[in-house]
Length: 180
Image 1 (cartoon, rainbow, N blue to C red):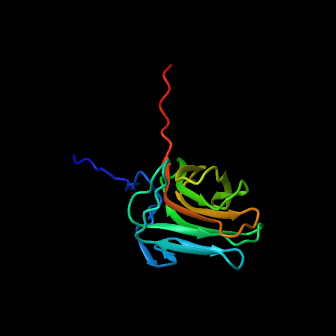
Image 2: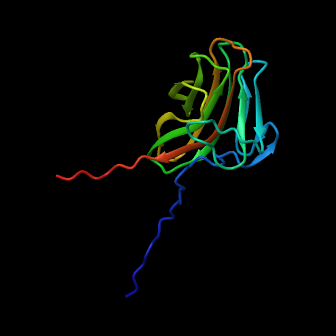
């Protein structure tokens, strides 16, 4: 008698599920590969910066040779955003973060992260150094398909506010088995 074996195809999910999260692939000086950028009002601008060393004296430092510079619009009720759709492991919780540096900012400057249109985190600019900032958590549904949007804000409509950003990550949260 011959045994019949059936296989269920598996999806290999990388540790960081955000494609081009390090921004190393770009199409033009204002467009990242795989990312869509938009401004909710006139005056917002996204620049792809290559190569530029924007390391701050203290704090984290981006890797690679490409980062973005985001200038949100001056209207405090608007934003500049980047977003992309991606596939992650179904029914899994993920932790998101980004390297960001705010320049010419105040305490109303910061960013907001959304997963499938739901706010996951709000972060304010705490200093002018590159820091890894939490973008919160999300849990995928049975399909694993999701959309991440990061909004860069100018809460007080400041002149010359801008952000450097790099290395967007979404990594599965490891849940350790409990012992009884």
